[in-house]
Image (cartoon, rainbow, N blue to C red; front, side):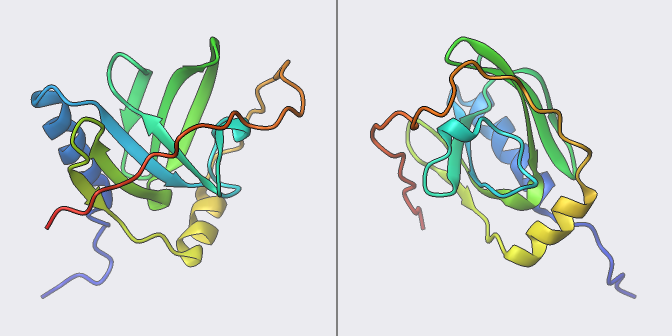
Length: 144
């Protein structure tokens, strides 16, 4: 008998890829499709997406949970609380070689994640309404 309400495999795969990266000396990155349920510094979002370094050296209090990825990180020298619903993770990969895994992200998952999200605490920013810094955009390499 198969249970139709099995939990998603996505959080388990994210944790496995994180562990694979760290065990092999690679830097684990997550690409996130940003919406209202994602708590990240908006000034670093480009094209509705953000790429985050989730390595041990770049984060503090990292929790790779079944529903959310939560940690503290510094952006421009300012400590920020980051919270990403697992359903908004588009990919987990190693910065050094691009190997990892991509995941589909749908708008229906976004609605579910938004309703399940704990209340967000807005971080005060002294940066004002400056445009985000421009630079090269990270790219994923599909490995077959």
